[in-house]
Length: 470
Image 1 (cartoon, rainbow, N blue to C red):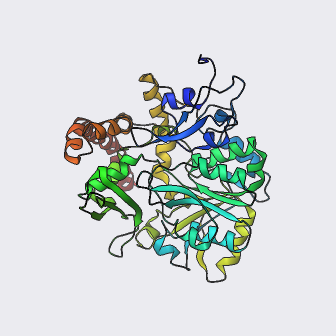
Image 2: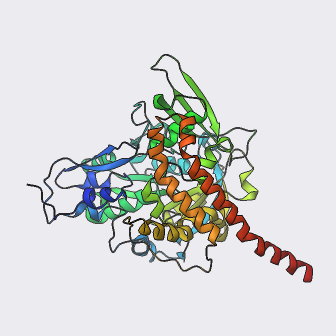
Image 3: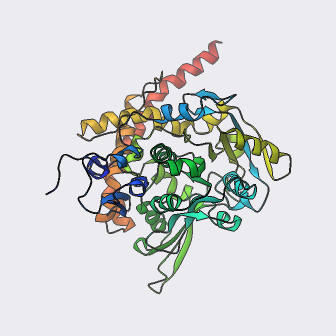
């Protein structure tokens, strides 16, 4: 008979739609009672194999990045980095040693990378310098049911095949199981919540603690379900339910780095192959900012800069860099070994980097950071009003108060993040039908945006008057 009193990620996290699908729980479960599956909305979730979780076991919850526990990014970061000589701290970035902006000059890293190719360069360098034996990163796969997966790389060529971002769900249960079964030194790169899960798992398992030498992070605003890739396919005129390949961050000389493309292939199995590239300005940007197909856990994430990672990589979304179509990377470092590598190699013509003030790092991500910190408070209030369970989050005092219009925008986008997946299914993944079904919500959001703009008019007038009277 089922024990209704015991707790695990399935009845505590998944049941409240807070699972990010990282896969750490399935890999670390001492009873081998969990697996990771894709649900009807194209999201990875934890699923219980059998009813055999003992009452005394809470391992899966201890490694879950969205479970309410004593450890958070602040406490983990302090234990990891606070004692490092020269370490500094800001509320936005967490701990940091140094920050740089630049790009890789070798192996077409920059051309084929998400931004300046610095993440690929550093992973290759760690392998070349024999600081690690294996690198774990996300790679495309020919499996049309997954398209992307975490992969254990043993060669430079393996790592190079994993360059570029993947705006697509991935889970790491298999690679974590591989690390547990195979001795060696590993570097692993992932999104902030995955990095947090890895650190939590390392605290629970000595093998992981001993074998994982570097945890690298990617700055993240939100993650998407599989439906986002299908939507992009539909925007390009493809058949969404026949999507077979998806590529992100396509660069072209006639567009700035910020207007990158996403490539899709569909229908080859049906005998009518179709492929194309859709750029951010062609509908992707709107869907992204309106939070279509955003995984619900991302609505309650406050970590922009992968605060528990040894290094964090991000795009240089600054005016002086974003117009260059080839792209620039910002690297935020928290590990002295990685910092020394960057400094040494910058003089060997392998990379072109220069120091970047942390204030500039923060400014490069300021709109997303506002969403993760200021807007999240409003999302939490709204979700609680709707009767939803939300995770306990850190408090970030702010002098900025949301205007009436801005609150309406945040709430409208939250509803879109939750409704878009259901409507995509109901519309049978047909673009025209989906847009028709979502139209009332889009109209509501556009009205909210109008009120938001009205809220800024008095401030703008005041600034002009100040200039006139000065």
